[in-house]
Image (cartoon, rainbow, N blue to C red; front, side, top):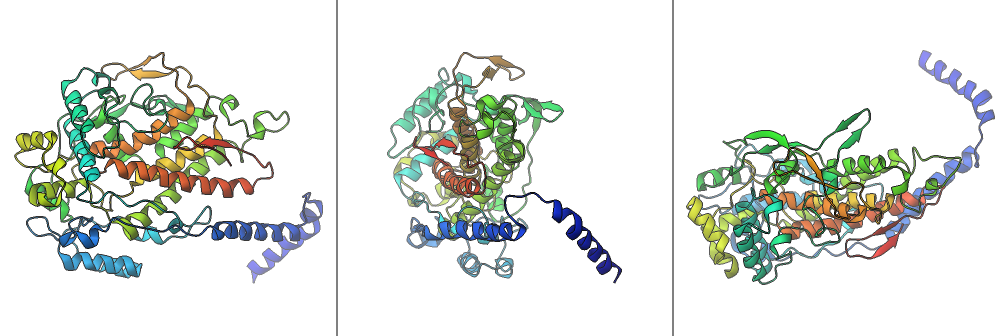
Length: 512
């Protein structure tokens, strides 16, 4: 009773005073209606765009024993073949889409599946996660899958070579020559550009984006980007017993050795960063760095860039940029999770490595005869992929990469809010030992370094052995679609009616 009287008193006060003094372009009733109409309008706009088709590569039906599919944490035979009844139970749970169904999936150990129900969450901005499309992942026995896996094995062998030494390192040159002669390889094949991305900016300047080197302004504190590193030469899952235990979902018996912090110098350093980063960390940091450069690097379509009496703060300023980056990243993850679990279920590279050891007849000849595979065999006594993490890959399917999908969405948002053609002030690269940053003469742009940042975060997972190149490239394109859809909904909600311009990964310039 007291609570009812209190709320009634407050209501009376508001009715008699605050409401009488309210200044608004619309009455309360009009605003109430228009807020509803806006949501209905955006829902209709997204609804009339029919959902994309969802083709897969048919490996699940064409390859025996589900050998072409993700099956980590399920029970396996001694030769790594997944228990078929357990895999069918996983398919049943995916079809049911319920919490209870996934709890019934058989387990080979205590490690859990990574959040398969995230694929069923509904988004309130942009398109629904199920509405986006992707081309099928490369089939298990294809030349493209083989070429990608040769690259992953090469990265595993060359994790500790500094990026600055690529043009002089003989093993880098050997890897570049092998990749250049492979059928359907889609990455760069010169020693200087080896293991880089394929989009604008990826192949200009240092391998690592400026946004992973520059200091980060975080309120009253400036944070440098030196990170602890993993010990050189320390690889995992290199014995059949260790590999099988991890595939069954057992906890790893080994751990990484962490060493003193430095600026990133090589593939192992990059793989270390993407081992423990929170989902959109690199892009949150990039936004903070660019915001510190002031309105000169804002997109020209931001009306506050030239306003004389109003400043951006909540909308079209730092608050909204950081918020939109986070929202886009999470929405991209949900879109990726739908593709991973409900469409493709692509096996991880470590599972492909298990086939190289136990069932190579399923794989393309150009992988089975590769130089890098022979090197691994000579070094470890088997053909398993040497992994950068003790636990190997995460417990969700490979295609598309979650890091890549986040990357595509977040850099799309950042390219809309910031001027892509603006040059990066005072570009740097690390000293030979990674202790300090040194100035360089390269002319680097915001757009190019954002693309490079997205590729770094994506390819960093390849360096660890947990993804293939196409997981990253196609994941970034999926994330880009998610980011654009969210920006379209975002733009229509604003009274300033901003018109922001961005360049897609394929070079097409669009306006939001």
